[in-house]
Image (cartoon, rainbow, N blue to C red; front, side, top):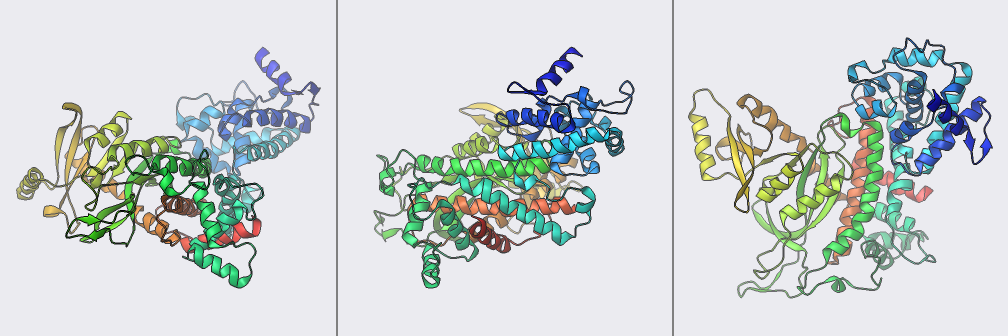
Length: 594
């Protein structure tokens, strides 16, 4: 009791000023403490967990000696419900599957099956006196505001109507509009502003104007030139000329300690290879901050620790049509050909393009891109000793970035990442990997054995060693399963996973799980549809275009996710708002309110 009395007294004092134990005074004391916590915590549930609740000033008609959950625990629980604007039923369901919330509300239980039910939540609220209910309502409003002010909570998570009944009466179209507008507000206040052009304070066109132009270019599938031309024709004062716009975008990718007038050649090292790590880091600092704000929005709606979190790593290409050879027969390449352009094969044709690797949430989560990496591979027109980026290094950096935001359980790859060091890194992190593998002669023999077997249609090869530097690093399972793919040898696919011993009857389920990469190709198509057209070979512009377009894609996917959660629709169902509609609305919204 002494500790509780001390906490109450501390909570009712602020900067030497006594706060009256009236409902407003009690609420003010909690909010003052919340404001201090918001300055050091990142998440709402951490703030609620540490709040000093002046229980002696609250009136609860329940018999405290007989209830499972006391006034302190239930006040915290109902406080979260009010701030997040969710129903009692939804809160009860979340408590039953999310240990982090149970811990945050001081609920002393060991079995999630024994968390407060909807009936207990309703009964407890009814047993609070009118004054205590007023304290709760005032505290909800106050903590919500200080959480917003300090970036602990984003506006995308704040309910726009006060009562559950009113929300439940909204039509599907109203939900779509509400959730979309919340995401647009999130973009304007917490996402887009993370991209700073580092230009002088007296600049004619603000960063907001530049990013508004970028969104408009994406919406119209245009270019800096076409947007500037439109601004000139319409005398639009909020559209600058294309050279000003391109300089501003390049500045986002220019390291802060560099002269803003430096050209791309200034970022080349002694090997004539651009110092891409400096350019990448400049862009990714902004991308990471913006992504964290987006992730916090999703986390608030459906925490990642409530289900298996799966990510997929893949590489996409943006074709570059310029021929690399000065004289191909003589083996003479163009001397100034862009260093970051690599060759690749698609549809049976050899092409050239800029490559980007991504790590993306897949499965039952919103398909948000968590990280981006530039890719450089040695190509036929380059000298044999030309630098290229290790797949293992790419994967390591992408995993580092993703694990800043979420606790991963599984990582999926395509067969292009079949590298021992890639799998070793994933295994060392305590994660499961799943990937198709190239089919070799011994695999073809195994497939033939399966086909000739009278009953078996799938086989596991157990405990296959994966070595690093001549030593066995770990053992994996090779899975041989029927495939419907036209290019699968013998109509069978071969997968590898470090999952614990897989039994034959489990093969189909595991392999079918690979389909959770369902959105990767659509993801890349959407991002490339967003990207402004450009002929520039300046990699600062190329990478920044990809990063900003990916960010717009993430915002679109966040909107789709929030709507589907609100309407209880499957996350993997077709988008409820098209990408083109969203990006057009984003451009208009940024212009109207920026």
